[in-house]
Length: 228
Image 1 (cartoon, one colour):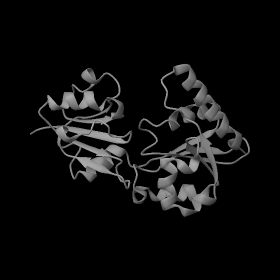
Image 2 (cartoon, helix red, strand yellow; image 1 turned 120 degrees about the vertical axis):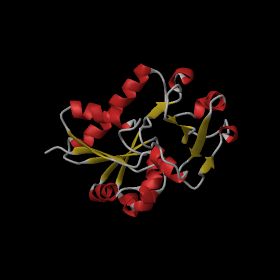
Image 3 (cartoon, helix red, strand yellow; image 1 turned 90 degrees about the vertical axis):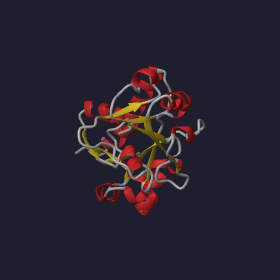
């Protein structure tokens, strides 16, 4: 018998937003993989351990997932991560892989998931609250109504082209290009909201494009809505 890889979304930051299933799966398994060099220092671990204190006693497996653009280096990194996980799966142990938000939305977990699945092991995904849903709730607004379109955009790529959509635009991964994003949004007639570190102790919210700080951190998400 071999083990199963289970990707578990821990939500955007508030441990109370973790699902009951996420909590149960973490409690029921002993091997917990966490993306980062030091498992206990990662955001995913710090969120999950507040909801599942037993996590402190689990076998933590830090998985290095560097934020780099070199495709060859990334491929090697993902292969090595899959090798780490497979070590436990081959022993018949399940591996729970913690990931921020939802595992299916821009998650590095999916690179490991694909490799493990290709190697013939069982896999499972436990959904978590996506950051943009949590951010909209925090701002007390709807993402979409009636026939509005919703576009989830990695704003770090091709800013000018990718912002030209109707409806509501969710701009993720904006931190490194916040200046360019802010400049473009200021030229548009739209309502702009930004949440930095949604659900965390150092959360900050902004309700105008003019107020968006260009030095905001990595966990910053912008919602731009067409005015009615």
